[in-house]
Image (cartoon, rainbow, N blue to C red; front, side):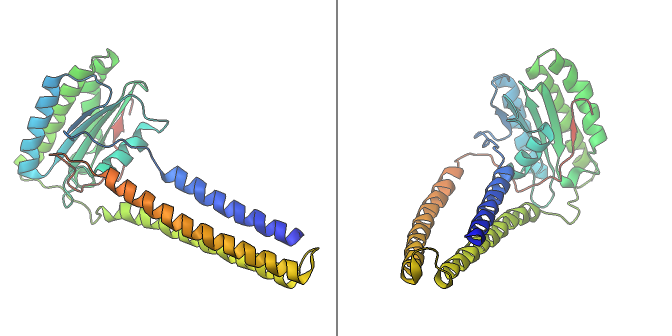
Length: 279
């Protein structure tokens, strides 16, 4: 009985570990709007500012593949601005897939904070020191005065000029041998972790059944064997139900994740870092 209790506890701990690990990796990042280049979830930007950001981005992307995305949220949902910017950048795939030349300007109104992040291909030509200077000179004064529209417009123009000048001077972004596959590797790591956990739990379950078969407790051999058969039947039923419901959830997610928009990410990615308020 003691061995069975220990094994059940171990199985529950393994399952709890998997659930907590997946929950920690699941970051609630909003989907971009149909405009993509500008996402004003807080409703603080004027239409003229949005139109200017979209128009200049269309021209920039057509010529260079680069994208400068501006996003304003109510709050960061408990995440740091740096983490939210990193997750948003890579999930939205900002910038060209080969050049990794995207830029994300992220503002959080309730958190009174902001962050700017560049793609991996721009780390050398648009370094964090340049991003920090632009934020302090063009965004901070208006942001402190809560004139978000003016600050965003000035900051976007400065970022645009920096990226445009890189290509105007014959420069090119460098991905440094790193592409969007790094994000996919993390996803596969989650899947492998889940599979290993399920294998461990299945092995422990079979061991418990054999233990009851060879060492029946209290009700004799026949009752122990019957209990093992009944538990196995229930487990097979629940396995079939789980696979059925899991398939339904997967199809629902795929159908819900797509959105019809004229603009979208180009497959770019970021290593993280960037510049924020006060650094």
